[in-house]
Length: 214
Image (cartoon, rainbow, N blue to C red; front, top):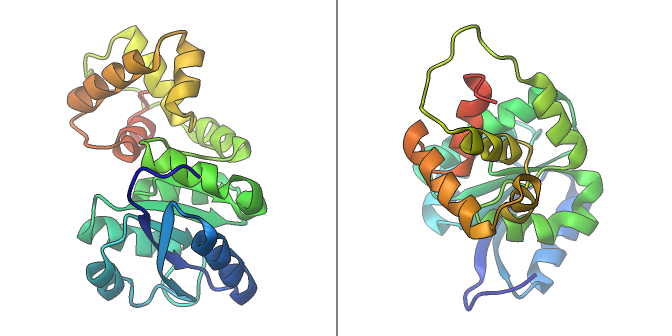
Protein backbone atom coordinates (compact mmCIF):
# COMPACT_ATOMS: atom_id res chain seq x y z
CA UNK A 1 0.00 0.00 0.00
CA UNK A 2 1.36 3.40 -0.95
CA UNK A 3 1.98 5.95 1.75
CA UNK A 4 1.69 9.72 1.63
CA UNK A 5 4.09 10.88 4.32
CA UNK A 6 1.74 9.94 7.18
CA UNK A 7 0.36 6.58 8.28
CA UNK A 8 -3.39 6.11 8.58
CA UNK A 9 -4.41 5.40 12.18
CA UNK A 10 -6.47 2.21 12.37
CA UNK A 11 -8.74 0.50 14.89
CA UNK A 12 -9.83 -3.11 14.34
CA UNK A 13 -12.97 -4.81 15.66
CA UNK A 14 -13.20 -8.57 14.99
CA UNK A 15 -14.50 -11.24 17.36
CA UNK A 16 -12.66 -14.18 15.77
CA UNK A 17 -9.33 -14.37 17.60
CA UNK A 18 -7.33 -15.93 14.76
CA UNK A 19 -8.68 -13.55 12.14
CA UNK A 20 -8.16 -10.56 14.43
CA UNK A 21 -4.52 -11.58 14.94
CA UNK A 22 -4.05 -12.17 11.21
CA UNK A 23 -5.48 -8.78 10.22
CA UNK A 24 -3.52 -7.08 13.00
CA UNK A 25 -0.29 -8.56 11.63
CA UNK A 26 -1.14 -7.37 8.12
CA UNK A 27 -1.79 -3.84 9.37
CA UNK A 28 1.32 -3.71 11.57
CA UNK A 29 3.55 -4.80 8.70
CA UNK A 30 2.13 -2.19 6.33
CA UNK A 31 3.96 1.15 6.36
CA UNK A 32 0.82 3.01 5.35
CA UNK A 33 -1.11 2.07 8.48
CA UNK A 34 -0.64 2.35 12.23
CA UNK A 35 -2.65 -0.07 14.38
CA UNK A 36 -3.97 1.73 17.46
CA UNK A 37 -5.96 -1.15 18.90
CA UNK A 38 -7.65 -4.47 18.08
CA UNK A 39 -10.77 -5.59 19.93
CA UNK A 40 -13.05 -8.62 20.02
CA UNK A 41 -16.20 -6.55 20.56
CA UNK A 42 -17.44 -2.99 20.04
CA UNK A 43 -19.20 -2.47 23.35
CA UNK A 44 -16.83 0.39 24.25
CA UNK A 45 -16.47 1.85 20.77
CA UNK A 46 -17.56 5.36 21.83
CA UNK A 47 -14.76 5.75 24.36
CA UNK A 48 -12.21 4.15 22.04
CA UNK A 49 -12.90 6.33 19.00
CA UNK A 50 -12.98 9.46 21.16
CA UNK A 51 -9.63 8.50 22.70
CA UNK A 52 -7.80 7.33 19.58
CA UNK A 53 -9.50 9.43 16.87
CA UNK A 54 -8.72 6.88 14.13
CA UNK A 55 -8.65 7.65 10.42
CA UNK A 56 -10.05 4.23 9.59
CA UNK A 57 -11.91 1.45 11.38
CA UNK A 58 -11.98 -2.16 10.18
CA UNK A 59 -15.31 -3.40 11.53
CA UNK A 60 -16.70 -6.92 11.77
CA UNK A 61 -20.43 -6.85 11.09
CA UNK A 62 -21.50 -9.41 13.70
CA UNK A 63 -19.94 -9.45 17.17
CA UNK A 64 -21.12 -10.34 20.67
CA UNK A 65 -23.00 -7.47 22.23
CA UNK A 66 -23.09 -4.48 19.90
CA UNK A 67 -23.19 -5.30 16.19
CA UNK A 68 -20.80 -3.77 13.70
CA UNK A 69 -23.64 -1.88 12.07
CA UNK A 70 -24.71 -0.30 15.37
CA UNK A 71 -21.08 0.46 16.18
CA UNK A 72 -20.66 2.12 12.78
CA UNK A 73 -23.62 4.40 13.49
CA UNK A 74 -21.97 5.49 16.74
CA UNK A 75 -18.60 6.04 15.07
CA UNK A 76 -20.16 8.28 12.41
CA UNK A 77 -22.05 10.16 15.13
CA UNK A 78 -18.94 11.00 17.15
CA UNK A 79 -16.34 11.10 14.35
CA UNK A 80 -18.12 11.59 11.01
CA UNK A 81 -14.81 12.05 9.20
CA UNK A 82 -13.61 8.56 10.19
CA UNK A 83 -13.86 5.92 7.47
CA UNK A 84 -15.35 2.50 8.28
CA UNK A 85 -14.65 -0.62 6.24
CA UNK A 86 -17.07 -3.43 7.07
CA UNK A 87 -15.56 -6.92 7.11
CA UNK A 88 -18.04 -9.78 6.94
CA UNK A 89 -18.83 -13.27 5.73
CA UNK A 90 -22.32 -12.09 4.79
CA UNK A 91 -23.15 -11.11 1.23
CA UNK A 92 -26.93 -10.68 1.51
CA UNK A 93 -28.53 -7.43 0.42
CA UNK A 94 -30.04 -6.57 3.83
CA UNK A 95 -26.65 -6.46 5.53
CA UNK A 96 -25.14 -4.57 2.60
CA UNK A 97 -27.79 -1.87 2.66
CA UNK A 98 -27.78 -1.63 6.45
CA UNK A 99 -24.00 -1.18 6.44
CA UNK A 100 -24.20 1.57 3.83
CA UNK A 101 -27.07 3.32 5.61
CA UNK A 102 -25.12 3.16 8.87
CA UNK A 103 -22.33 5.14 7.20
CA UNK A 104 -19.86 2.44 6.16
CA UNK A 105 -17.37 3.71 3.60
CA UNK A 106 -16.84 0.29 2.08
CA UNK A 107 -17.75 -3.34 2.38
CA UNK A 108 -15.43 -6.31 1.95
CA UNK A 109 -16.17 -10.02 2.24
CA UNK A 110 -13.78 -11.78 4.58
CA UNK A 111 -12.76 -14.29 1.93
CA UNK A 112 -11.15 -11.38 0.06
CA UNK A 113 -9.23 -9.91 3.01
CA UNK A 114 -5.89 -11.53 2.15
CA UNK A 115 -5.94 -10.29 -1.44
CA UNK A 116 -7.96 -7.06 -1.35
CA UNK A 117 -7.66 -5.47 2.09
CA UNK A 118 -4.84 -3.05 1.26
CA UNK A 119 -6.33 -1.96 -2.06
CA UNK A 120 -9.70 -1.47 -0.35
CA UNK A 121 -8.13 0.69 2.37
CA UNK A 122 -6.21 2.73 -0.17
CA UNK A 123 -9.37 3.25 -2.21
CA UNK A 124 -11.32 4.40 0.85
CA UNK A 125 -8.63 6.87 1.88
CA UNK A 126 -8.72 8.32 -1.65
CA UNK A 127 -12.48 8.84 -1.48
CA UNK A 128 -13.67 5.59 -3.04
CA UNK A 129 -16.20 3.06 -1.79
CA UNK A 130 -14.83 -0.47 -2.24
CA UNK A 131 -17.21 -3.39 -2.43
CA UNK A 132 -16.73 -6.91 -3.65
CA UNK A 133 -18.31 -7.52 -7.07
CA UNK A 134 -20.99 -9.75 -5.52
CA UNK A 135 -21.91 -7.13 -2.92
CA UNK A 136 -22.04 -4.30 -5.47
CA UNK A 137 -24.39 -6.42 -7.58
CA UNK A 138 -26.64 -7.04 -4.58
CA UNK A 139 -26.82 -3.34 -3.79
CA UNK A 140 -27.97 -2.56 -7.31
CA UNK A 141 -30.50 -5.41 -7.28
CA UNK A 142 -31.91 -4.20 -3.97
CA UNK A 143 -32.60 -0.68 -5.19
CA UNK A 144 -36.29 0.04 -5.67
CA UNK A 145 -37.35 3.34 -7.14
CA UNK A 146 -40.21 5.06 -5.33
CA UNK A 147 -43.01 6.32 -7.58
CA UNK A 148 -42.15 9.92 -6.85
CA UNK A 149 -38.55 11.04 -6.50
CA UNK A 150 -37.21 14.47 -5.63
CA UNK A 151 -35.75 16.32 -8.60
CA UNK A 152 -32.27 17.41 -7.54
CA UNK A 153 -31.45 18.78 -10.96
CA UNK A 154 -28.81 16.17 -11.73
CA UNK A 155 -27.60 16.15 -15.32
CA UNK A 156 -27.61 12.90 -17.29
CA UNK A 157 -23.83 12.69 -16.92
CA UNK A 158 -24.08 13.25 -13.16
CA UNK A 159 -26.67 10.47 -12.97
CA UNK A 160 -24.29 8.18 -14.86
CA UNK A 161 -21.48 9.02 -12.43
CA UNK A 162 -23.77 8.51 -9.42
CA UNK A 163 -24.89 5.11 -10.75
CA UNK A 164 -21.29 4.03 -11.27
CA UNK A 165 -20.42 5.37 -7.82
CA UNK A 166 -23.23 3.35 -6.25
CA UNK A 167 -21.74 0.18 -7.74
CA UNK A 168 -18.68 0.69 -5.56
CA UNK A 169 -16.47 1.71 -8.47
CA UNK A 170 -13.28 3.68 -7.86
CA UNK A 171 -12.81 7.07 -9.52
CA UNK A 172 -10.60 5.36 -12.11
CA UNK A 173 -13.30 2.82 -12.96
CA UNK A 174 -15.97 5.53 -13.07
CA UNK A 175 -13.82 7.46 -15.52
CA UNK A 176 -13.49 4.39 -17.72
CA UNK A 177 -17.18 3.53 -17.36
CA UNK A 178 -18.29 7.03 -18.37
CA UNK A 179 -15.41 7.62 -20.81
CA UNK A 180 -14.25 10.79 -19.06
CA UNK A 181 -11.11 11.85 -17.19
CA UNK A 182 -10.61 11.28 -13.46
CA UNK A 183 -10.51 15.06 -12.92
CA UNK A 184 -13.88 15.33 -14.65
CA UNK A 185 -15.20 12.57 -12.40
CA UNK A 186 -14.09 14.55 -9.34
CA UNK A 187 -15.83 17.67 -10.69
CA UNK A 188 -19.07 15.78 -11.33
CA UNK A 189 -18.95 14.21 -7.86
CA UNK A 190 -18.43 17.63 -6.28
CA UNK A 191 -21.53 18.90 -8.10
CA UNK A 192 -23.48 15.79 -7.07
CA UNK A 193 -22.58 16.39 -3.41
CA UNK A 194 -23.73 19.99 -3.68
CA UNK A 195 -27.04 19.12 -5.35
CA UNK A 196 -27.84 16.25 -2.99
CA UNK A 197 -26.66 18.32 0.00
CA UNK A 198 -24.32 15.57 1.23
CA UNK A 199 -20.70 15.68 2.35
CA UNK A 200 -19.23 12.33 1.39
CA UNK A 201 -19.52 9.40 -0.95
CA UNK A 202 -21.29 7.16 1.55
CA UNK A 203 -24.02 9.77 2.13
CA UNK A 204 -24.45 10.23 -1.62
CA UNK A 205 -24.81 6.50 -2.29
CA UNK A 206 -27.14 6.04 0.68
CA UNK A 207 -29.36 8.90 -0.50
CA UNK A 208 -29.33 7.56 -4.05
CA UNK A 209 -30.45 4.13 -2.82
CA UNK A 210 -33.07 5.40 -0.37
CA UNK A 211 -34.63 7.88 -2.81
CA UNK A 212 -34.39 5.80 -5.98
CA UNK A 213 -32.08 8.20 -7.79
CA UNK A 214 -30.21 5.40 -9.56
